[in-house]
Picture 1 (cartoon, rainbow, N blue to C red):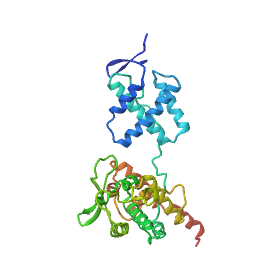
Picture 2 (cartoon, rainbow, N blue to C red; picture 1 turned 90 degrees about the vertical axis):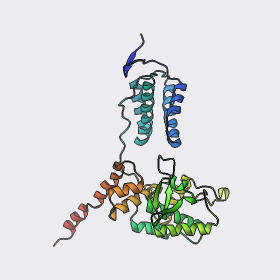
Picture 3 (cartoon, one colour; picture 1 turned 180 degrees about the vertical axis):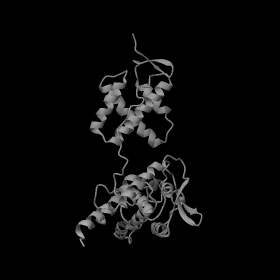
Length: 314
């Protein structure tokens, strides 16, 4: 007799065979941005590979738990969390469509440490990085403009890559760069361009020559793809090279560190959490609160007080 599991008041066959066609239908069903769709595709393919390798056509809850535990041995927590999230969404859909019971309901992924894994730079260190850039060349002018933009606005590399020349405009009395925010389809968000940043960008564009409209704001200057839009990888490489050139060579310092730097310096210089949330484009203020917790630790001078008590005797 077949095992029947009630889901949402409807009896579903627990040993219904999950075919590749069912997985394909779910991927077609997901209404998300292309990047998220690619992520879900990669995640669900991993799960399908696990099922096929172990000859599991009708998985159970225990199979998913075993799969999760195997992932934990090979992948970092954030990856495990992503893959299990895709599995949970898949089985939620199969239950809604009366295809297969939701055997993944309430299965936890992996505990992800919400503290930042990347360091930030102090204001003095930022100045050192910028001063190390040779602005006498077109390469240098581009890199300097790119770095000042990222340091002062906290923009992600994907937003920098997508930016076009025409995206520079005004917001009130301030120059601004309109950009496509995370999860958005249009350029409705904007960051203000402080005068030194706007000047750096204008000097770069002037040295570059004719550039307007939908042309990329930052272009590659390599021989094989000169004039093409810079990729997130090439932007990350430029940032990393600039950090190393200034003497900051650490695995904890990457392009994303510039985003952390913008947020931290903003808070250290009097900004509110809400202002920093708006700067970074966080939809959930809890994400921004991570910086607040870090700021509390920065302003905790316990070590200095203890050292003073030990070493500065009366």
